[in-house]
Length: 162
Length: 127
Image (cartoon, rainbow over all chains, first blue to last red; front, side, top):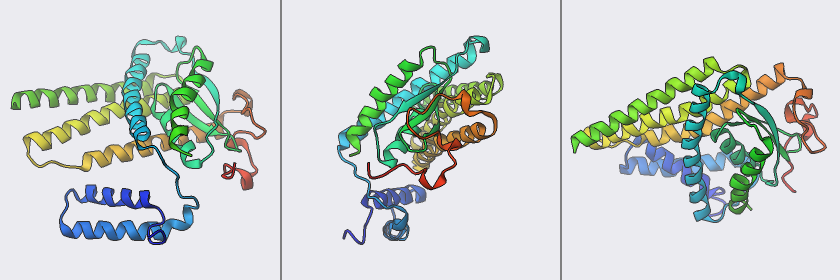
Protein backbone atom coordinates (compact mmCIF):
# COMPACT_ATOMS: atom_id res chain seq x y z
CA UNK A 1 0.00 0.00 0.00
CA UNK A 2 2.80 2.37 0.95
CA UNK A 3 4.65 1.52 -2.25
CA UNK A 4 1.56 1.90 -4.42
CA UNK A 5 0.64 5.24 -2.84
CA UNK A 6 3.91 6.91 -1.82
CA UNK A 7 2.18 10.28 -1.32
CA UNK A 8 -1.36 9.76 -0.02
CA UNK A 9 -2.14 13.50 0.23
CA UNK A 10 -1.05 14.06 -3.37
CA UNK A 11 -3.22 11.14 -4.49
CA UNK A 12 -6.25 12.49 -2.62
CA UNK A 13 -5.71 15.96 -4.08
CA UNK A 14 -5.41 14.62 -7.63
CA UNK A 15 -8.57 12.53 -7.15
CA UNK A 16 -10.53 15.55 -5.90
CA UNK A 17 -9.17 17.92 -8.56
CA UNK A 18 -10.08 15.51 -11.36
CA UNK A 19 -13.64 15.16 -10.06
CA UNK A 20 -13.90 18.96 -9.84
CA UNK A 21 -12.55 19.26 -13.40
CA UNK A 22 -15.14 16.90 -14.89
CA UNK A 23 -17.77 18.61 -12.74
CA UNK A 24 -19.62 15.45 -11.73
CA UNK A 25 -19.23 11.94 -10.40
CA UNK A 26 -20.18 9.41 -13.05
CA UNK A 27 -18.66 5.95 -12.54
CA UNK A 28 -16.28 6.42 -15.48
CA UNK A 29 -14.77 9.60 -14.10
CA UNK A 30 -14.43 8.03 -10.62
CA UNK A 31 -12.41 5.19 -12.14
CA UNK A 32 -10.28 7.54 -14.21
CA UNK A 33 -9.68 9.78 -11.17
CA UNK A 34 -8.50 6.71 -9.24
CA UNK A 35 -6.16 5.73 -12.09
CA UNK A 36 -4.67 9.25 -12.24
CA UNK A 37 -4.34 9.40 -8.44
CA UNK A 38 -2.31 6.19 -8.60
CA UNK A 39 -0.13 6.81 -11.66
CA UNK A 40 0.89 10.45 -11.28
CA UNK A 41 2.38 10.12 -7.74
CA UNK A 42 4.21 6.97 -8.83
CA UNK A 43 5.70 8.65 -11.92
CA UNK A 44 6.69 11.81 -10.08
CA UNK A 45 7.81 10.30 -6.78
CA UNK A 46 11.46 10.75 -7.77
CA UNK A 47 10.90 14.51 -7.53
CA UNK A 48 9.32 14.35 -4.06
CA UNK A 49 12.17 13.08 -1.93
CA UNK A 50 10.45 13.63 1.41
CA UNK A 51 6.96 12.58 2.35
CA UNK A 52 5.26 15.64 3.72
CA UNK A 53 4.71 15.29 7.45
CA UNK A 54 1.39 16.90 8.20
CA UNK A 55 -0.47 16.64 11.45
CA UNK A 56 -3.11 18.49 13.36
CA UNK A 57 -6.04 18.80 10.92
CA UNK A 58 -7.97 21.38 13.02
CA UNK A 59 -4.88 23.62 12.92
CA UNK A 60 -4.81 23.34 9.10
CA UNK A 61 -8.47 24.29 8.77
CA UNK A 62 -7.98 27.13 11.25
CA UNK A 63 -4.99 28.35 9.25
CA UNK A 64 -6.92 28.30 5.94
CA UNK A 65 -9.81 30.26 7.47
CA UNK A 66 -7.39 32.77 9.03
CA UNK A 67 -5.65 33.30 5.70
CA UNK A 68 -8.93 33.74 3.79
CA UNK A 69 -10.05 36.33 6.36
CA UNK A 70 -6.68 38.10 6.11
CA UNK A 71 -6.90 38.14 2.30
CA UNK A 72 -10.25 39.95 2.51
CA UNK A 73 -8.79 42.44 5.01
CA UNK A 74 -5.66 42.80 2.84
CA UNK A 75 -7.77 43.71 -0.17
CA UNK A 76 -9.57 46.47 1.69
CA UNK A 77 -6.34 47.80 3.24
CA UNK A 78 -4.47 47.88 -0.08
CA UNK A 79 -7.46 49.41 -1.87
CA UNK A 80 -7.57 52.18 0.76
CA UNK A 81 -3.86 52.86 0.35
CA UNK A 82 -4.15 52.93 -3.45
CA UNK A 83 -7.14 55.27 -3.43
CA UNK A 84 -6.55 57.63 -0.53
CA UNK A 85 -2.84 57.79 0.24
CA UNK A 86 -0.76 60.14 -1.93
CA UNK A 87 2.47 58.57 -3.18
CA UNK A 88 4.55 61.07 -1.20
CA UNK A 89 3.19 59.70 2.10
CA UNK A 90 3.82 56.11 1.16
CA UNK A 91 6.57 54.43 3.18
CA UNK A 92 7.59 51.25 1.38
CA UNK A 93 10.19 49.15 3.20
CA UNK A 94 12.24 45.99 2.87
CA UNK A 95 11.98 43.67 5.84
CA UNK A 96 14.15 40.67 6.67
CA UNK A 97 12.23 37.88 8.34
CA UNK A 98 14.32 35.18 10.02
CA UNK A 99 12.49 31.86 9.69
CA UNK A 100 12.58 28.95 12.11
CA UNK A 101 10.71 26.62 9.74
CA UNK A 102 12.98 24.15 8.02
CA UNK A 103 10.89 22.03 5.64
CA UNK A 104 10.77 23.53 2.10
CA UNK A 105 7.00 22.91 1.90
CA UNK A 106 6.38 24.92 5.05
CA UNK A 107 8.62 27.78 3.87
CA UNK A 108 6.82 27.86 0.50
CA UNK A 109 3.48 28.01 2.27
CA UNK A 110 4.68 30.82 4.54
CA UNK A 111 6.04 32.79 1.56
CA UNK A 112 2.76 32.35 -0.34
CA UNK A 113 0.74 33.43 2.67
CA UNK A 114 2.88 36.55 3.12
CA UNK A 115 2.32 37.52 -0.51
CA UNK A 116 -1.45 37.10 -0.26
CA UNK A 117 -1.86 39.06 2.99
CA UNK A 118 -1.85 42.76 3.93
CA UNK A 119 0.64 44.93 2.02
CA UNK A 120 3.51 42.44 1.89
CA UNK A 121 5.16 40.57 -0.99
CA UNK A 122 7.79 37.87 -0.51
CA UNK A 123 10.63 38.79 -2.85
CA UNK A 124 13.54 36.52 -2.07
CA UNK A 125 14.95 33.92 0.26
CA UNK A 126 18.46 33.85 1.64
CA UNK A 127 20.68 31.29 -0.05
CA UNK A 128 20.71 29.08 3.04
CA UNK A 129 16.92 29.25 3.38
CA UNK A 130 16.89 30.85 6.83
CA UNK A 131 15.40 34.26 6.13
CA UNK A 132 12.87 35.77 3.76
CA UNK A 133 13.09 39.14 2.06
CA UNK A 134 9.68 40.82 2.23
CA UNK A 135 8.63 44.06 0.61
CA UNK A 136 6.00 46.13 2.43
CA UNK A 137 3.77 48.57 0.58
CA UNK A 138 3.32 50.85 3.57
CA UNK A 139 5.25 50.10 6.75
CA UNK A 140 5.98 52.96 9.14
CA UNK A 141 7.21 50.32 11.60
CA UNK A 142 8.98 47.42 9.80
CA UNK A 143 9.76 45.58 13.05
CA UNK A 144 6.05 45.31 13.84
CA UNK A 145 5.47 43.71 10.42
CA UNK A 146 8.17 41.14 11.12
CA UNK A 147 6.78 40.30 14.56
CA UNK A 148 3.25 39.99 13.23
CA UNK A 149 4.28 37.57 10.49
CA UNK A 150 6.24 35.49 12.96
CA UNK A 151 3.49 35.25 15.58
CA UNK A 152 0.46 35.16 13.29
CA UNK A 153 1.59 32.79 10.53
CA UNK A 154 4.86 31.11 11.32
CA UNK A 155 3.86 30.02 14.83
CA UNK A 156 0.74 28.38 13.39
CA UNK A 157 2.67 26.70 10.57
CA UNK A 158 5.10 25.28 13.12
CA UNK A 159 2.20 23.49 14.77
CA UNK A 160 1.11 22.04 11.41
CA UNK A 161 4.48 20.91 10.01
CA UNK A 162 6.90 18.85 11.99
CA UNK B 1 -36.26 34.37 -3.12
CA UNK B 2 -35.17 35.14 -6.67
CA UNK B 3 -35.13 38.84 -5.89
CA UNK B 4 -32.83 38.28 -2.88
CA UNK B 5 -30.54 36.05 -4.96
CA UNK B 6 -30.40 38.55 -7.77
CA UNK B 7 -29.57 41.39 -5.41
CA UNK B 8 -26.87 39.28 -3.73
CA UNK B 9 -25.32 38.32 -7.08
CA UNK B 10 -25.44 41.92 -8.32
CA UNK B 11 -23.80 43.20 -5.11
CA UNK B 12 -21.01 40.64 -5.45
CA UNK B 13 -20.44 41.56 -9.10
CA UNK B 14 -20.34 45.28 -8.34
CA UNK B 15 -17.97 44.86 -5.36
CA UNK B 16 -15.74 42.60 -7.46
CA UNK B 17 -15.73 45.13 -10.27
CA UNK B 18 -14.78 47.96 -7.91
CA UNK B 19 -11.85 45.99 -6.51
CA UNK B 20 -10.74 45.02 -10.00
CA UNK B 21 -10.70 48.68 -11.03
CA UNK B 22 -8.87 49.71 -7.85
CA UNK B 23 -6.23 47.04 -8.50
CA UNK B 24 -5.70 48.23 -12.06
CA UNK B 25 -5.67 51.86 -10.93
CA UNK B 26 -3.02 50.99 -8.33
CA UNK B 27 -0.88 49.57 -11.10
CA UNK B 28 -0.95 52.99 -12.76
CA UNK B 29 -0.72 55.18 -9.68
CA UNK B 30 1.92 53.61 -7.45
CA UNK B 31 5.44 55.00 -7.93
CA UNK B 32 7.82 52.08 -8.57
CA UNK B 33 7.81 48.41 -9.68
CA UNK B 34 7.94 46.90 -6.17
CA UNK B 35 4.98 48.89 -4.85
CA UNK B 36 3.09 48.30 -8.09
CA UNK B 37 3.39 44.60 -7.49
CA UNK B 38 1.13 44.98 -4.43
CA UNK B 39 -1.90 46.22 -6.33
CA UNK B 40 -2.49 43.26 -8.68
CA UNK B 41 -1.53 40.59 -6.11
CA UNK B 42 -4.10 41.80 -3.58
CA UNK B 43 -6.83 44.12 -4.73
CA UNK B 44 -7.68 41.81 -7.60
CA UNK B 45 -7.91 38.61 -5.51
CA UNK B 46 -11.21 39.80 -4.04
CA UNK B 47 -12.24 41.04 -7.48
CA UNK B 48 -11.89 37.61 -9.03
CA UNK B 49 -13.18 35.89 -5.88
CA UNK B 50 -16.34 37.98 -5.96
CA UNK B 51 -17.03 37.16 -9.61
CA UNK B 52 -16.48 33.45 -8.93
CA UNK B 53 -18.83 33.39 -5.92
CA UNK B 54 -21.43 35.28 -7.95
CA UNK B 55 -21.05 32.72 -10.75
CA UNK B 56 -21.47 29.82 -8.30
CA UNK B 57 -24.58 31.40 -6.78
CA UNK B 58 -26.04 32.08 -10.23
CA UNK B 59 -25.52 28.57 -11.56
CA UNK B 60 -26.54 26.94 -8.27
CA UNK B 61 -29.65 28.95 -7.47
CA UNK B 62 -30.89 30.51 -10.73
CA UNK B 63 -29.74 28.33 -13.60
CA UNK B 64 -30.03 25.20 -11.43
CA UNK B 65 -26.86 23.47 -12.66
CA UNK B 66 -24.35 23.76 -9.83
CA UNK B 67 -20.76 23.98 -11.02
CA UNK B 68 -17.55 23.12 -9.16
CA UNK B 69 -15.17 24.82 -11.57
CA UNK B 70 -15.14 28.08 -9.59
CA UNK B 71 -13.54 26.34 -6.62
CA UNK B 72 -10.78 25.06 -8.89
CA UNK B 73 -10.24 28.49 -10.42
CA UNK B 74 -9.81 30.10 -7.01
CA UNK B 75 -7.54 27.25 -5.88
CA UNK B 76 -5.25 27.70 -8.90
CA UNK B 77 -5.39 31.47 -8.46
CA UNK B 78 -4.18 31.21 -4.86
CA UNK B 79 -1.45 28.81 -5.93
CA UNK B 80 -0.17 30.88 -8.84
CA UNK B 81 -0.53 34.51 -7.64
CA UNK B 82 2.28 34.36 -5.03
CA UNK B 83 4.60 32.51 -7.41
CA UNK B 84 4.09 35.04 -10.20
CA UNK B 85 4.65 37.89 -7.75
CA UNK B 86 7.82 36.22 -6.48
CA UNK B 87 9.18 35.77 -10.00
CA UNK B 88 8.46 39.36 -10.98
CA UNK B 89 10.08 40.57 -7.75
CA UNK B 90 13.16 38.41 -8.33
CA UNK B 91 13.53 39.57 -11.93
CA UNK B 92 13.25 43.16 -10.74
CA UNK B 93 15.85 42.60 -8.00
CA UNK B 94 18.15 40.92 -10.43
CA UNK B 95 18.00 43.67 -13.06
CA UNK B 96 17.47 46.90 -11.15
CA UNK B 97 18.26 46.74 -7.44
CA UNK B 98 21.86 46.78 -6.13
CA UNK B 99 22.52 44.55 -3.11
CA UNK B 100 23.34 47.60 -1.03
CA UNK B 101 19.69 48.72 -1.06
CA UNK B 102 18.49 45.53 0.61
CA UNK B 103 18.62 44.77 4.34
CA UNK B 104 21.17 42.15 5.46
CA UNK B 105 19.98 38.54 5.53
CA UNK B 106 21.00 38.00 9.13
CA UNK B 107 22.67 34.73 8.09
CA UNK B 108 26.06 33.90 6.62
CA UNK B 109 24.71 33.66 3.05
CA UNK B 110 23.47 36.40 0.70
CA UNK B 111 19.96 36.64 -0.76
CA UNK B 112 19.46 33.81 -3.26
CA UNK B 113 19.16 36.17 -6.26
CA UNK B 114 22.65 37.54 -5.55
CA UNK B 115 24.26 34.33 -4.36
CA UNK B 116 26.08 32.73 -7.26
CA UNK B 117 27.06 29.52 -5.52
CA UNK B 118 24.23 27.58 -7.14
CA UNK B 119 25.25 24.18 -5.84
CA UNK B 120 24.33 25.11 -2.30
CA UNK B 121 21.30 27.32 -2.80
CA UNK B 122 18.68 24.71 -1.83
CA UNK B 123 17.50 24.99 1.77
CA UNK B 124 19.14 22.37 3.91
CA UNK B 125 16.59 19.67 4.53
CA UNK B 126 18.38 17.90 7.33
CA UNK B 127 18.44 20.72 9.85
